[in-house]
Image 1 (cartoon, rainbow, N blue to C red):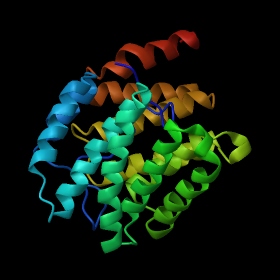
Image 2: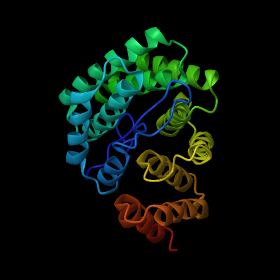
Image 3: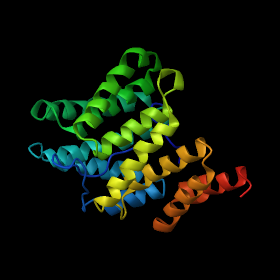
Length: 252
């Protein structure tokens, strides 16, 4: 499975399956295990099928169900950008932003929605990089507002971490600072009990491991990857690729 990028490189940094307006993060037991299996085995066609089922059955009067659908769009859009299927990605960005904007009209200070808004603007930059000059600051305003409103918001911390990791240092990027946001998100997952068969938790842990390695904190990267393998056996990306490649590169 080709791994997508944040803007152009982020691997399916996707939101969890069901969000609530109070906490900003919870899980749908209806799809949780199936989504985890599809993600862990790299089967995006299965992801697409689940997303289509959700799309057909979503209750437009339910905030939770609409956000669940946005979360599927979010993941699929990231994959499409990584696969350079930009026309289809633009369709899903448009679908998602219509829902997000409608919900923001109802709840303009919701930290999760603001983080989503910033993330989708970043997706647009991934498709049209020349737009970064004026869309980049706009994306960051939404993400920063999310963090300011709710410093513990999981999605806000993930998006802030992604931004700090992938943004060039000349434009304010800082991989060490990104680690702090990833760690905060991971701790929130664990504190809220959002770990079992939660692909977004694994994805954030994986981003953390990569950030440790990128900042030459090899032992921390090793421990992070080993934790993933212990908790989520058969997660192909880490078990078959990232972890053994790290050991080889560092003669461990």
